[in-house]
Figure (cartoon, rainbow, N blue to C red):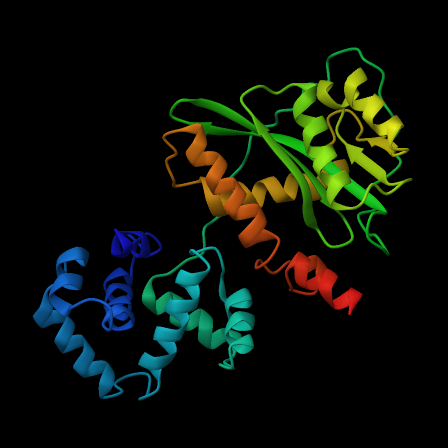
Amino acid sequence: MILKKRLRTLPKGAEGATAAKYAFMIQMHGEFTVTALCRALEVSPSAFHAWRRRRDQGRNHGAGWPAIEALVLAAFTAEKGRSASPRLTLDLADAGHRHDRKTIAKCLKGLGLRAKAARKFKVTTDSGHGKPTAPNRLNQDFTAAVPNQKWVGDITYLHTDEGWLYLATVIDLYSRKVIGWAMSDRMKAELACDALTMALWRRGFPKGVLVHTDRGSQYCSDKYQKLLDKHKLVCSMSGTGNCYDNACAESFFHTLKVELIHGERFDKPSDMRRAVFEYIELDYNRRRRHSAIGMVSPEAFEAQRVA
């Protein structure tokens, strides 16, 4: 079971896949026998040993290349196949292994490894409800000088074999941290309210925060608007049909679906809930480097500013 989980990030049917399998075997050799690894990866033991001899002799790339490949593969696996050469270069540097980004990119190509790629997504906003809306006070200014100055919220859909789940999030634009989120099998006002309530609790119920969303019926509902008024929050909404007005919220869902959802199958809603919790709380907020905040994680960014 442990070995099967670690095999998920290896390329399938791509150029360089065999080399990636061999490098993975070297990485796992201390935990599993060569025989077990060859059986799991469906490779020939004699071919593996021949490949290792060639690599140890330093053909083509020099004697240090196998060690660099092993480091790159370990870093790629640790990030669950989500990071390309720019982020992996920084991850390795933090661990004391400094290599040029082009070297890391060359290793990835040689091993047949490619970070999960982007796809297009479906819009879930229902703005044809006839309820009152708020003006666009954010006006596509996604910068924030301090925490709790500007928050953005949105809702997306997630598929499981037993039906759809809906995810609502609230992100602080200061650090791009997901500070509130909620999931439900119904896309109702309560979903948006639960995500906002979590954000309020986590941030100590600040006043005067600009909270920007789209014009979906959940955000225009009496229940959500009363929650904003109760906590003295300022409402802002995107223009009709303009996804760029809430680009940061859309970008997070884009990232989540690329890095977590696509290529995976979720049998039950409970499996999806568990995966989303792990992605948001353990991977995205704590580990994932964000280009808008200097290629550090949201929590690291906030910790640096507090310190």
